[in-house]
Image (cartoon, rainbow, N blue to C red; front, side, top):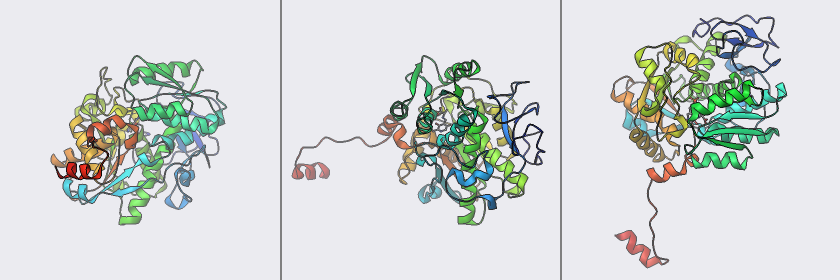
Length: 419
Ligand code: F0G
């Protein structure tokens, strides 16, 4: 199977362009990478992956940010703001409270538009230029639209975004608006928006930059490369487990692909591959259902709801790539309540790390798995936080302290503080 952790480095087919090609994960059909626009397999409609004849080792990387990892990407440079190089925070109080040997938090909210999506867009918009497409588009719970709008603007390309009406956090719409995206608010959920934008792409109206686009995931692989490099530099070992929020399961797929390519090149031992552990909100947990029930396919949830609007998704389109990733690495998936998400958001904030609700699911998931004994006390864990606190100001207000009205007078303020 092409998604096995120990699959050998593939031979370049004749369609390869400079050692890069697209391959269907279901039927193995191969395609030239940049000769035509395609998102899925022409033959069986399976998901496509970018493949390389020469997967990278750690010695191949130089510079900073996403493009440090050019040897793992289809281009030397992209449309850049720049992105990546995000902090891997120590969180000593949380580490102690949760009770693991080591806990670090990779804060992807520190990217230019405040989420990990920028890593995908720097590559995706570069590919769009290579293909010579016109309008860029995505369906989004918010962050993808903010990133696409900014990178489209940077690349001088028009953007169209489809959002589920009333379900996108204010900071994200503000970004898409100011970066000049055309914003369509659809009377439906994210999955409905994605169905429509796929229709538009199939009709040649737009170039699709959701994570169904295999090039997006190439950029997002660099989250894994940064974690492995920095963790190893600091601790002389690799993390036992990486825990992350799951929506469309793009990041889960991208991290797994990162590990597979490093194993192929001999840079990473199979035994050192971190256990990929996905977390969803209870009201939108089709991946967790599939893992718990041992299903090969994910059942689409028609109705989804959660405070973590970024991952309010019932049809994780990358599940065929992500399920093998969770299983082959020995990881798992778990769902958490909205209350646990808000608690985790507060706990991160108390360490100075400000995240949006979806991001806090990684910590909420770790807490639950630790309580259940699924995660051991001697584990070294990295939790991914995917988006910045300012993305969702309303959730932050609701979770945080309330401002207090006071008179314009020092004595009165001292009295108020003494109360
Ligand atoms: N965390 C945040 C903050 C997100 O915005 C998303 C996805 C995820 C996690 C899930 O990542 O899809 O790779 O599993 N947001 C998309 C969007 C759907 O439109 O912004 P995934």
